[in-house]
Image (cartoon, rainbow over the protein chains, first blue to last red):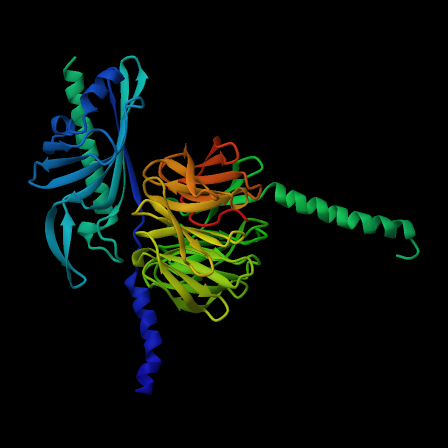
Length: 191
Length: 323
């Protein structure tokens, strides 16, 4: 028994060395698009909190609750059947920007990891906040910047691949990119 | 010496004069050490000119930082390489690294730079580092997911915010025992200790407020509502103003320590996190994680002075300027 006990620190050391722990760290993405249209026109298209249902191809529906004060929400229905509830954090029409965070999401699938059931959210991120901003470049050119800040969905050490940093960054970037590309198309077509 | 009375006299005058001069030179430009989580480095800002004068490579995903009272010892926590980088504050060189458990995050160091304290996010302990020996010498069990730390000037007490326990623990640094604990708001993270007023300020990330505690008993004096997602706290003007970063608002809340009310809210960069005060008590440095910059505020006149570009994902969680 004594011999076994004396082995324990060594075992712990081996375990620690192989566990290769990775603490989650907050990630950020910035996705931009340049649109050939005046900033005022672009802002008209995105200024409603629920306008996303019109310009994002993966958002099929949106229900806006509350006005444009902090704490108002929107519930997005996604093309894949999932849903996301966003809460408005800041709305500044003068700066043509608003900020929101994800309050709640549906589960895309359930996996077993580290001996436990894990719900993979429809967007595999945690503590996600975002800001969308419309910036005039010149009279007929506008840049739309959509930034996101989030953690990976798995907040403990050693994430499964569905819930690691790469999965989070890829999914969020793709969501922003698809939205902005379609926004550009819509605005430029409607001249 | 006796044979050269003049020289001797001169030396007697010159030595303290030189010392005096050096002392002031040191005070004139304390450095700010800003951890850049996205690029594994620390940006060193010379606060005399508010410019980055050096970038130091550290461990992986650096977050927490602490500077000793004389500015000579800097500890940086690296959550991903699970160690602490030790930096020499005089020549700005890395002296070495110290392995520290699973999830090092919050860090503090005593005034002399002899003892460091590292909060372990995953193992729910505070580790005590003997800085000259460069190793962990003790472990103190605290609440769940400890984050922000503060050490008293005499080095005898250590405070820690336990994020997932919604509490604060007071550690006796001599016996290394938790001598008091108190529930605060939801998810306490950054803390600041005002020894003059015997107060501890605690930023509660999820309840959007600051708990003001009596420092000896941890008795709750008041809860002050601040901005959205408060993260870290700095004391300005000798503690008469308390400045809190609000991550989701891109602002800081300025609290008057007498009335314990928010007297102003100032715009900073995006996603402000770490915050520290210059020894002049007037200038406060705010680290903007999303903007990769530091906003320098004048808390006397409640305005922004300048913005300094730093590295990718700047965090600066801790006291990053020598107090």
